[in-house]
Image: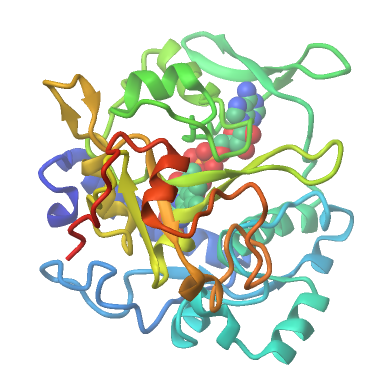
Amino acid sequence: MRHLGGGYQVDGHQDAYIDHAPRALRRFTELGVPFQLVRGLPDHYHGHAPGSRSEGRMVETALISGEDLGEWQHKVLVSPELPMGVTFEEAIAWGGIGNARNFDPELMAERCAKDLRGFGSGLAANLIKLLVDRNVPIELEAPVLDLVREGGRVSGVVLGGPGGERRVRARRGVVLAGGGYESNPELVDRFEDITGWTSMFPDSLTGDPLLMATELGAGLHVIRRHMAVFLGFPVPGEGADAKPFLRLAGIQELSKPHTLVVNQRGARFADESYFQSMLDALRDFDVWAHTYRNQPCFLIFDGSYTEHYSFGGYEIGVVPEWVQRADSLDELAAALGSTRPAWSPPSIG
Ligand SMILES: Cc1cc2nc3c(=O)[nH]c(=O)nc-3n(C[C@H](O)[C@H](O)[C@H](O)COP(=O)(O)OP(=O)(O)OC[C@H]3O[C@@H](n4cnc5c(N)ncnc54)[C@H](O)[C@@H]3O)c2cc1C
């Protein structure tokens, strides 16, 4: 873990994680969440870290059917980025999610018909099922507006929503389960060394729970040079009311063969196949030009890519009209607004 912290880990946080993670895992397992080991992790998944083991570093839940959630089946969303009906372990064994065309289509169709869910969507569905089975009320459209404090402790929350404000008392405590702040531009500006941020995440990731905790005096610790920034591109919505969405290219287009990413000068600047390896380069600031060297950047591909893999979630072979295209690199550079008029092929190794 120290190795992975890259010099930025805090011993106390690390120790707390090591002490509490197994207890949390055991507790959820006892409550009925079917955790299982992910075996066969590829070596690039930190397999070379000192003390790393090939098994036991990652767990996932068994597939769960959305039908088990009753009326919550369609309220618990599934990820648009990852295939349905497949476990992480299977996806690795079958050649990775980039090779979904190798998955057995009949098996996948059968599993999708049963609304089987894995990955994070499977974990979320399993946790909701715990609540549904125990008749624990789940409130939607009821944001926590504030924490109620009494006698030096938090004794409840103030809920908002269409019905107006109301207080809910908590006898044993309030759990703030919300670390994400990707849709709060102010927090992103403050905590991330990156400009031009657009959230690919649900609008509800406002970071409110973090703010509420700091108001009580909790300390926030920003993990420097963390690797959780994703690269993506906007896909226009289809139909009159459709909203554009941001495609998470880091685990899709970039990790597959026959794509590369160049900066405005047409130069490749990192290993696209592992999106985390691009992040330092994205923050690279040219002090003389006073611009970021590698922002904006452009995803480049040709027919060798589209023949085999999906672009932007479209069917294999389909490249929508809004994608800039050209018959030569010069024309493509001009179309994309490259700052290097006399294009010569970049040295891409
Ligand atoms: C594409 C992707 C891949 C990832 N892959 C992995 C992985 O493989 N392994 C891994 O461990 N992690 C992974 N992560 C990270 C992981 O998903 C997050 O770390 C985790 O979801 C954070 O959980 P959280 O409980 O802190 O809450 P969050 O998921 O941040 O959720 C915050 C919640 O709080 C709610 N909320 C906000 N404000 C209020 C309010 N005022 N009142 C009520 N509710 C509020 C929001 O609606 C939201 O539901 C991935 C993340 C992404 C985006």
